[in-house]
Length: 129
Image 1 (spheres, helix red, strand yellow):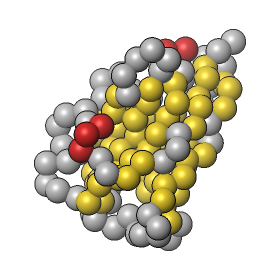
Image 2 (cartoon, rainbow, N blue to C red):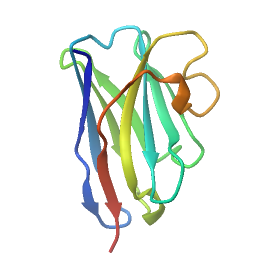
Image 3 (cartoon, helix red, strand yellow):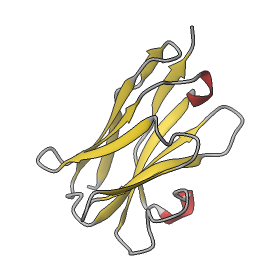
Image 4 (tube, one colour):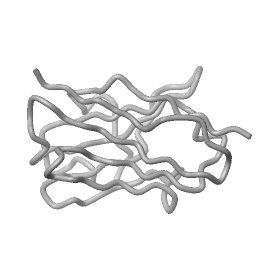
């Protein structure tokens, strides 16, 4: 059974850091595009970053560029989202998602919810003093 499990969320003060993990089971993340999405209360789910696991190329939305970094540990079959300089507006439930790789994924536009097939259950990130 294909499964993605996020972890690492929590409460952090503005300016702080968190690292989210997305662990895959039932399949390997080779040749996938893996995206991180977030959904704040009353707002639509939005894509903030992605990684293509064939070459570890990444893309970041303008809202997180320079603050968030994606990486992958192939041995652990896990993708990470390092979040630095967190702001209150980063507060949301964060989801990871995966889709078999295609050349147009994770290229020059924000990840789109309807392009990703497999989803985790989400992890809450709250940025507040």
